[in-house]
Image (cartoon, rainbow over all chains, first blue to last red; front, side, top):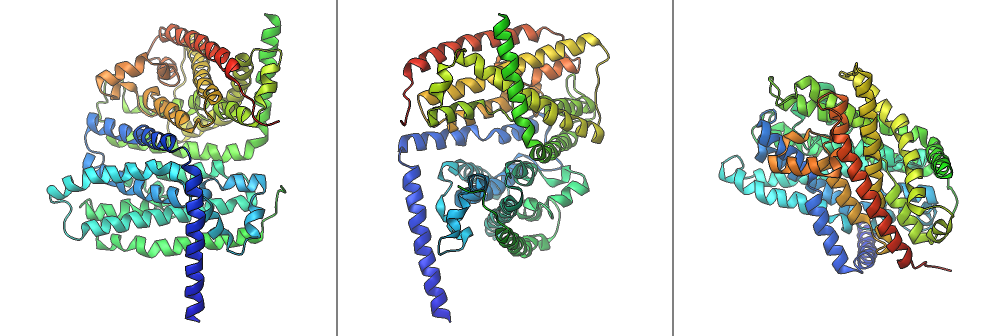
Length: 273
Length: 264
């Protein structure tokens, strides 16, 4: 039993690499244009950081979080989102598949639709999110380490937080995309389920009233991957259990999202091509 | 003159009507926008000192965010002119649009103005009402304030659409306008004052922002509405609108000579 599963996984890996490299070659035909756009997007896309920076510069720490702490929050949240955007770009533009009927072509492939969808295109043109997150981390981590805030295993927990955040983005993104099986147009829903929590979790959740805080760690749980563990790592409260919550919640969230996807797929009615 | 006004009215009405089919999806977006507004309001309430700063008290800041989240649906959000022009160029439909017996710039501007009016009525106002119910609202008592604020907003909308038009028309030279769109969007957010009064920025950046056309998309209309400023910025807005019109028409003339239609 084990051997066929491994063989299938290896084959899936090969197919994924082939499809992704084909997609990459297609997107990088005009290399100069590609590099220029990444550079511009990286610099210009840091507008939210400018907003936070201006506020901190003018008024001082937000709810006890100074610029380095919020920089760390930004780095974890942005890097997690960057990984999601890079690997799951097609989920983010799933509405186009529903509206045009292109999802039909995924159903006749000999692989699960979700696998084929994710392998169809990487969001290499959205690399700027990842670059911003990593750049912010590269600036903030050494400073926090020098101040003694980050010690020993903390860096590993930070990396784990990035992984949790990426997984939670994936879970929410997948569930939102699956809603497209019923309502077709999901772009506006994505603003609600992805963009709003993404913006909110760049700030410490302490600034929000408790009902909104609860929303961002349960229903739209993007705060669970970044804010909850960072609160403990950066000595802003909480307990060591905060490091474990995301590890428990992420598999549940991903399984739920995959379940919703499967139910939605069974209800799919083509718009025709 | 009469024909031009009539054309503007008809196209504006079409742009308005075209959006009516997406009302449910816009309702979802309204909820998201209210949440966005609340996020900014809570962040501001957390950072504002009790004494406020400059002419802004905690209460004025909340109203500033509420009004901005409303009018941004007219001057910035939901604007599709860039993509409409780029898509026309990509599909070759642009040849038909340029052959119409109407100025291309006016055609696009009128259509988009109607679409943005829809956006204000059906997306912006519900967001404003939602935020006002959850927080607090400000209603100016003076009729003149309403007139000046409406004029400033109308000019802001025109400036926003003109900027979008310039990005869209660049697709005559390059099929890829994603990066330029991104740059414009970021500048609008950073220098427009949608999420914070421009006085919060470092002084030199504040001056640049206030002199830029972006400040007319959010900052000045809200300042006038909240009676923090008189009508003087309207003249500067008019100057920007005129300058952008001249530039857009010049670029359109160049683009017309440059056009290569793909496909057969």
